[in-house]
Length: 427
Image (cartoon, rainbow, N blue to C red; front, side):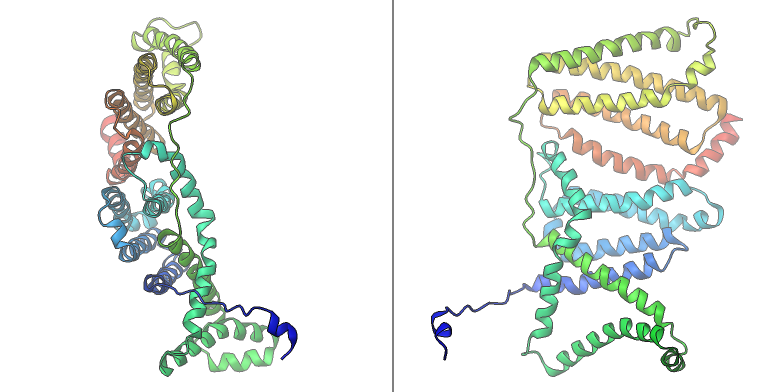
């Protein structure tokens, strides 16, 4: 034995021991990956229908894996119920969408809303956000949502490969199980190797084509690759949700906006809005004589989108100063005045939209605008209540309200309502 072998300390590496739950996550992720390939990648025709089936399947697998974490969280159940309702809407409406194009805009938006909401659902599960401290954790929730899309599908790939290797390398398994694993590995490898060899040699391709005359090997290889990639990404994502250290980011309220700054900012905004509302009372509500060259129809039609946008910004300003402003009576009064002026502006926007619809009828965009005004009105009422009930998580309630508001819009049957309105009311 050489000297350096005697002096050098022997380092024994111990393989990581994976829990039973981490191992069960493998078949769960594989099921989701197969469904993703079969229902999303392979089903562009009838996408709303198969998309809905995929996300319902995902929810079923998710709740099976993380049942202990989610079973007592009523916020998660509310989000799940709304998302499932959206999926059911797609299942019931997909034929109209495909063959007649009805409610196409709502459907296309829903294809983005469903995965976006379910990502928030997964991050709520991972970080165990508290409903009572939701307003202080909004930024943390947004960061976790972004992390779920761009980081978590990749940071758990090491665990995916590690647990896969651990299952292959265990020698104490029965011979049959080891043989099945071997054949599975060979099958997956051949999906890639054989199509490549067929492209490299025409004679070899001819012989293989005769053997597998009824099989499209290139298509099988492509979908096999999709399944394998999705398998790893879904495992990584779900492993991060259930087994990694997910630190909840909650911004404390120690840093407050100075009262002088708050007074100047809110006071200036209120002054401008007061002047704007004075114009609304004079020309829009009372219908006084307009300046020369401006007709009332033009005046009513223009500015709706800007008015509603300003109202949404006002509610955002309210949230910021409510969160970071010092708990002083002056700030509360200024915020109350801001909400009152926002209410006037919402009425102004509603009147403008109503006159616009009265002249030109209703369209998808105008219906969505009207729906949004109703939502902002509900948010305004909640903000007023928040001034008197400091413990109410107004931002969380507004987020859940927006979700159910969107679901309700779908069940209104937007295109059917537009057709009925333009036929029976507008005409």
